Image 1 (cartoon, rainbow, N blue to C red):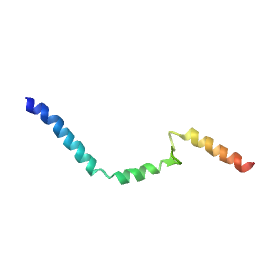
Image 2: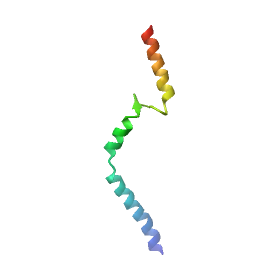
Image 3: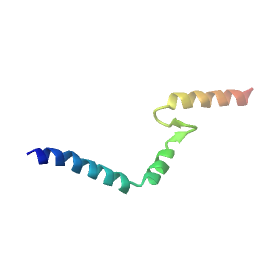
Length: 62
């Protein structure tokens, strides 16, 4: 019984490490870059991006 309690976390850790090595982190980073403009997320920071866009338009009109 004690062996089972010890083996469950060990096996879980091994599976986690194996999944991390199999993951293509470069592909994930490339996909994530599509959603960022100047360090701001397109969806979550849309108010900030809109404000920057308005400021740029105002500066062009002056």
